[in-house]
Length: 209
Image (tube, rainbow, N blue to C red; front, side, top):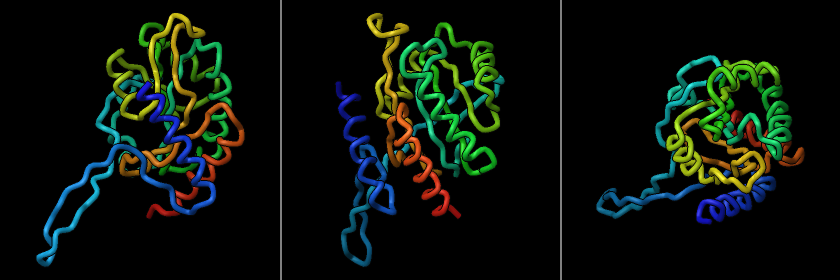
């Protein structure tokens, strides 16, 4: 419930960004004190995504170095998902095609089916939807690594025998900046939020040297 509540709060915050030029930095921030010219100053330590390591559909090792200094969008899915994943992938394809030639942008999709979604299965799925791992990485990993990553992004992902396909997960697209800060959440099942995501990606790209 804590993760789901956090995601809803973040999605609400992102909805407000359509009327502003600057995207907020989301997450659990810390604070530190320092002295400047004899005065105590409070600095904000912004939450950032922790280090990670997975393998993509072409057996490439993918870690935080790949996206260092780059804007990226991530989500959680599984290849046999019978519910929201097909629509999410259609919308993500729109993002993929929009930024295919943009070197400062990447897509990361984490499979939550740690049993079935092996690298060869992800390779076949990538071929089915027609994507390249140079831009869009379908990631496989161990159970704990995957679910720890979902928690790091503050979205829900879990095994659930009552859910379609046996897994429950958020339908969010998560926008992350070049410093690993979460900037916004979007409903990955809707065209409207996908269009807003594309707009906000351009906002971050235009603000990046």
